[in-house]
Image (tube, rainbow, N blue to C red; front, side, top):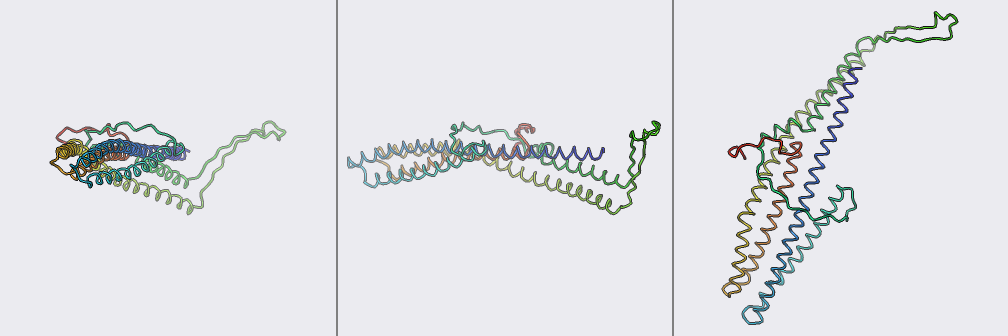
Length: 324
């Protein structure tokens, strides 16, 4: 009975840990969808600002063309760029509808249910080392704990299979009211079940031992796979954070400065309108790249937390000289 109770208890624990692993996967999916929702709104804001700037450039080109200080191709180039922006808007609206449907599916809502705009995504600056997160994952990840519970359940089944080789004693106490003599009515009995068919019990024992060995090898394999997934996710988060810093601190300011200089040169008559269009395209692409890098950073951090088994804040934060 104790062996059966132990096996059932560990089976229940394994089922509960399976729910915890599923919860981690759903949380990662929700955070990834939210990061994409943020990117969509950031890209729409950037598109709107770029469209307003392009409208001003078209007005400027038309004014200069009417005054004979610009070529007709300047106005045509601006119109072509405006058409390209309209095409980009269609792609963004399609992406918005797709992400909205994905989030509503996670919320168990109809696909077209309105959602509020996404708030700004905070980019983490301090990230624990890969070694610290590996230690944390091995200690608390529910997938590993689930396999360990299955190993314990298999060990209890081995004990149960071993006990099946021993005789089974049963004691019974009863009362038979059919006897006329009241002294004969109480009944007490002892029975012994001798296991003569040992081949079946040997098969049950071998199966229990094989299940335990399989669970042990599964644990070794899953540990290796988990550490590999975690290491890859950690490297991707570091890359995304570095990309955010590069675009935010260097590329976006340089592209904005380049655009301002190109507009000033065109308005003063020392620069060509093609330079303005090129600068506008570069500014648009760098701002979109920054928004994408921020969304990717949040998405990859969510995936990293899935492999760690929860928030990375529980890992030991290394000193600045140890950070990767």
